[in-house]
Length: 149
Image (cartoon, rainbow, N blue to C red; front, side, top):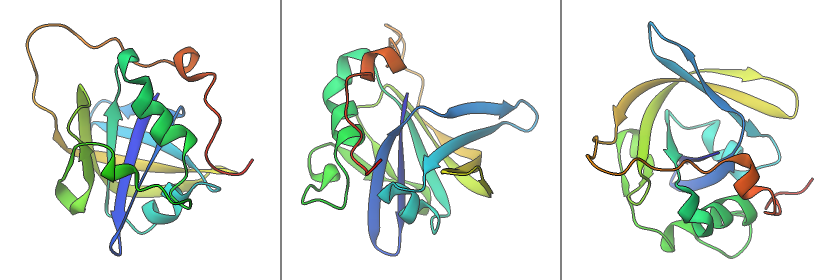
């Protein structure tokens, strides 16, 4: 599971996604799929870059914030987390153990999800020590999606 963030036209958005993968080695490319029902998709379709964040299993509260709350309600998700703007004004979550910002290369219609093909342009620094235990689908299974079904 990843948190994907976007910024465009003065708006920020972010959501928890389960459909994402590296899809090329040379050149390095990564694909994330955003639900068309999600506010993050509506912002991302105008964004030049997206942020992709790995969460640790200990960060279920952040997963809940980005997975169970929609930006259309009265919650500013970014007021509740430490973040900074990176390339393309992309919000990057400071507490994520690993992240990268990718330039949007293409958008692919996949039905109820749109794929964003990303060229990574910036990544979190390597931190020696404990490796994160990535948040997996099973860890987030009980979260209710924040967007309409």
